Length: 218
Image (cartoon, rainbow, N blue to C red):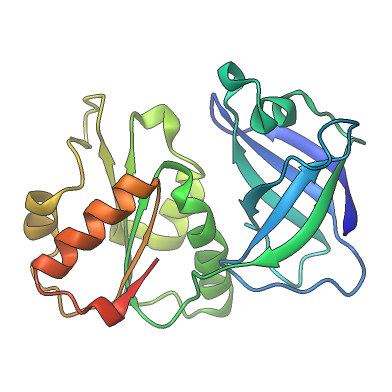
């Protein structure tokens, strides 16, 4: 177990907070990987939660992006109260979402976080090609790192909103009908991340439309 001191933290949406953390010496991880983390406060040390690194391996700090649920009075609510100098505890690193080649990324809400590090790594190396992103949120105000995603992906980045009509964007869900209209050809690799119901529904729809289950990365 390692201690991670908070260098800085700020809200980047109305309920999503970015934490910059001290990086332990010789600490390694890969884009798309997550960590089991708790808060170094009496009574909270054993309340473990998974959070994805959005920073890159060669950076001299770690970054995680966390949705804060103040009404739940749980770990995320406590994270929302932390300030610079507070400490988190890193228990282990894990991760199943690994970049395996060009494809279509489909994210719901904070499910974008493992994709952020993957996109950043590809963009930095000049290899962010033949990649597209379909990103679902409730409203425009819920988008995480919209400007950076736009810079990296350009027209290959599409937003879908479920609760708000916004000029220039579509108010609807990413469902089977939307996938047919937007993708057309399902002979591709697909990366899917979001709430469990969202991920299961998208994967089921993709397979029913001809996507190879072996080419689904979740």
